[in-house]
Image 1 (tube, rainbow, N blue to C red):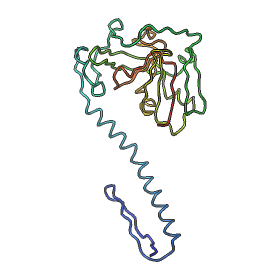
Image 2: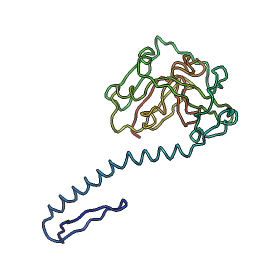
Image 3: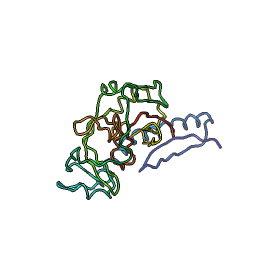
Image 4: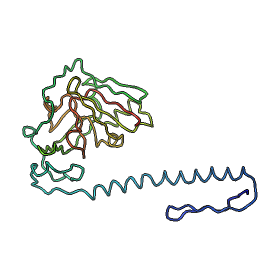
Length: 242
């Protein structure tokens, strides 16, 4: 049987299509193409709206920490569930440390390698990194069962860095590596968290250059992630499709 559409409509995310008989198969194919385009346009329109709703819902679920909250009371908490707007900044001398803390870097030889699905891979010196637009924000680091540091971190605007490197549209994950050698590790994050600077590379904290024991010259700052994901002594980031 040959069909010809005469109405298309939507109701509460359901799509209704009605057909009449007659006309040619070519007409039917043309209609299907138009219908697919129509549905795609709806998806494009609604996607930002749903993203905004999800973001607002996530914020609403967070527990707002009252002023005077003791850091010791947070060591078993999930940082993703905490709103830290009232939390005092931890003095740098009171910061706890985890993992390797004595790795040395020769800045004259050190480079940040930006690799993966890019049109222009980069190898950046420390001075070139400092010249990038920066992000500065307070982020809570929790090492479960041991300590919680609430620092004011300063580092590279990852969006600016990625734009310079020419990221390809199919990239979904960014992996950070550090340090070089026996104690090296890698952690991967969604590209969305990178582009909105929820995850970035810091070179300073509390108005000071990043101390050696906290990962100089660069360390990952990852809002909403536990401290084990905050890779120190970063020398490489790779953008990949996963």
